Length: 95
Image 1 (cartoon, rainbow, N blue to C red):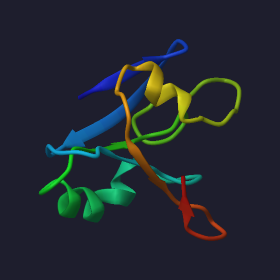
Image 2 (cartoon, rainbow, N blue to C red; image 1 turned 90 degrees about the vertical axis):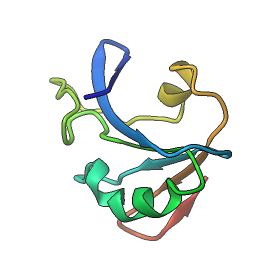
Image 3 (cartoon, rainbow, N blue to C red; image 1 turned 45 degrees about the horizontal axis):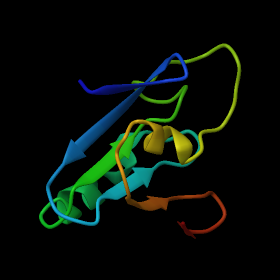
Image 4 (cartoon, rainbow, N blue to C red; image 1 turned 180 degrees about the vertical axis):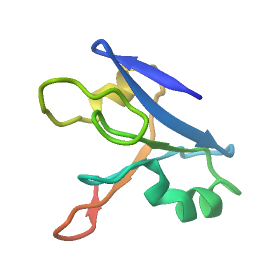
């Protein structure tokens, strides 16, 4: 199981496929990487795709404090440029 060490926490992620641009799927509150399984199945045919579990969700570490992720965690892992997609309880988001 792949994990990224970010600021002392282990964040779980899954990757599949190959091709540019890489697509990064970030789930909304209370969801994990499995929320994007249909997108990973579809886009991994033509792109590198990554879906992650934010801290406290899914297989990622659960710290004692609460706080949100930002795109910087992904970039600090040396992943390079990626297109980001996510969800919100209010409306779809594009980054």
